[in-house]
Image (cartoon, rainbow, N blue to C red; front, side, top):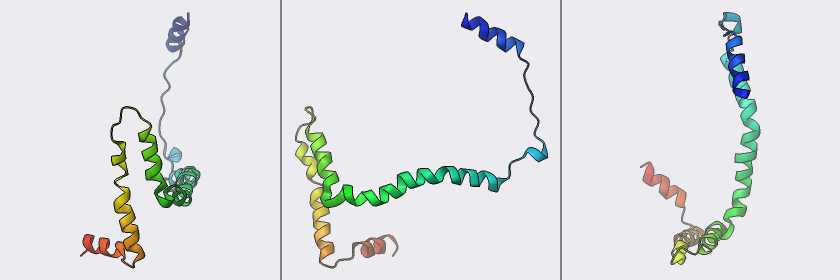
Length: 113
């Protein structure tokens, strides 16, 4: 029954043709403004919230530890303690930075000699 109604409606309706006139054109700046206004709430909720909540997640390497606990709960993973090895270089880098070594200066020096 529904197929008959759809077939009848498509045969009964005539295709509409659209022409673009010069007065119907959308200005680029207006389209960009609409895009920016639509993106701004998404930007605030995703990136700005992430900026302020990132220290909470990464505080004391909680992210790596919580990820380890999640993988440790999976019964098919064997020797999941190997996932904790990234904590060692992170901790060593943290201690070195406390001693006054400027990591960002040396990394940027390596990238941009």
